[in-house]
Length: 391
Image 1 (cartoon, helix red, strand yellow):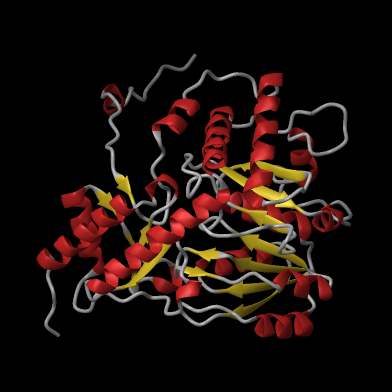
Image 2 (cartoon, rainbow, N blue to C red):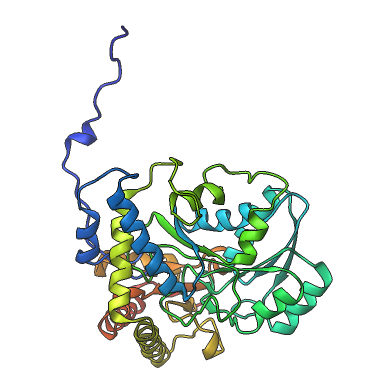
């Protein structure tokens, strides 16, 4: 037997210490003690009946969150990107047409994913901080005749809340599935999957739900399931194959469940508890709380002379606010100063908004007037003490 030549690393001899921070960036958000405690429950087997009961609770909670009766409702083991790929990989085959609305980075990512599996991808691009009209979308649907249309409801890179009403009807008029990314919006802004004709909807656990990153809720309509289960080729990913996931989550009609992967059971505990917290508050109350906090925040920013990146009030995402980067300042210095002096995370832009904005996320338990006041005070302090160019 060979001898051990690599010694135990000295860094692992130190006790793990993680600082407490105010997580007011675009995600992840702070996790309340109740949800942290749930995730610390004992680990049991991922095929034990108690886990299946917890998974059933999660499905019911997600149907409430999404406002859907879809049987094919579950949580992918992974972050929001895994749900995005699950949606695209199961409903798109090589040569299929995909239309992507690009109003920020998430449209860019969806187009990239679809291209990687051989789809014919076309895009329609919204102006910075703006959105597409239904007329724009119908024109593109009529021209390209895709099998799938992707749209980010809450575009966290630009702070846009894209209108949804009427788009599902347009997609179905052109025999197209409607896929919506709601990672940054669900629970914080009104969205009703069935009523709005959405065929595939997904989100992440780490935003408004205030659970740790690692689970990605997703739901498929019957129309989407028909497309996914009548493919001529297998999905490119075994791990994200909906037929396997459906069985593990008890969404098919089979009498028993077959091992597919080891589900992240402690993440399931946290997700279940986060859905319980939301159910106790009520969706409509959560929507209203986020909207009121956002309006209070926006008024405070404007009173300081700062400008909002999204001009139209109704198109402002209530969970993630984009502030036009103050003229003469280095946005990196501002975010670093606030982190160092106030132990508070805000961030710069992402993708098409890099260098243009500061982003502040107030999601779930973080969405409150007290936290708004904390962010406003930190921004005032940063603008007072950070270097400002006279050019």
